Length: 122
Ligand code: FES
Image (cartoon, rainbow, N blue to C red):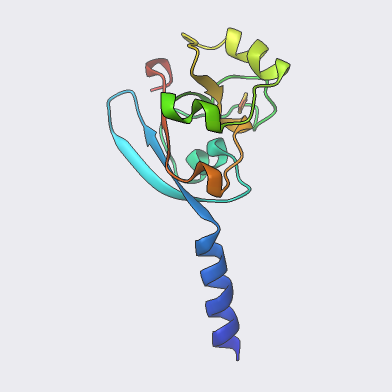
């Protein structure tokens, strides 16, 4: 019985994952499975992706989790809140596809998301 339950929960956890691809400034590609409910930033930190320091721990107060989202994903992401826009104004070379990865909550809808990490954070 224990093994059946363990297998069930392991399967459930695996199902509730989304593949997120992080591309560092030197074009190294890191594709990882991130648990739904975590943020894109937390997925990076937990998997030691270089370039996302997340100094404020997701408090939207540092911009060290700044990423560039692939254009085709922009419409699929939640709209930026004012605080995120303000913080991105202080980020290194913000662009129209800039996002704070700590504000992007992973879900099935983000399965396949690709983000580039700015060179300054390398
Ligand atoms: S972790 Fe600091 S703003 Fe995202």
